[in-house]
Image 1 (cartoon, rainbow, N blue to C red):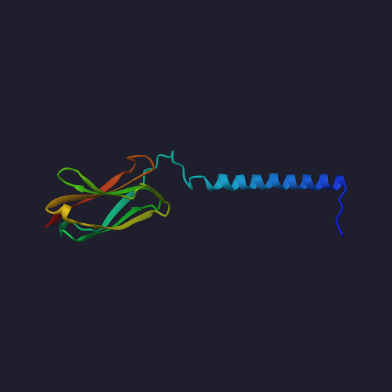
Image 2 (image 1 turned 90 degrees about the vertical axis):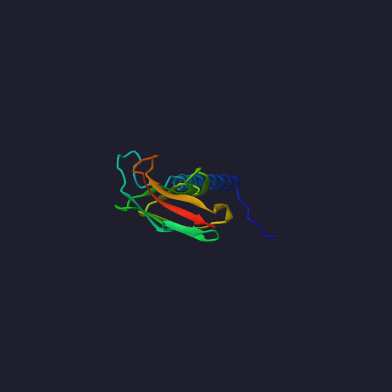
Length: 160
């Protein structure tokens, strides 16, 4: 039988080397974890900069719709200086009693660093919307609530 025989000194040295490798590997993984958990921010949130936001509601358009129609939502949120679009929200609600039917995206903090964000979705107007006046509001704002906030609104009437 052929075997490798290590003297006790060699085994201690090998164990020491393995321990050092494990410590270095642990440090490496820790650094990767810390780096990956940052907020992917390339700017200072404490700066007093107010963004120049714009909203373009491409669809739907103000007007009359019928039960069974699909509202195609296509809304562009832009920052004119290509800075970050932090928060957006689109809501569809009843103009009379403010019943909320639609609110997207679920997480308003979209953090679009390329200076633009588009919301594309669709919403079917079922029988519960018959003879209703609806309001669609699109909002965009900065990192803090209300900072640079603007909104666009359209009115929709649903007939039977």
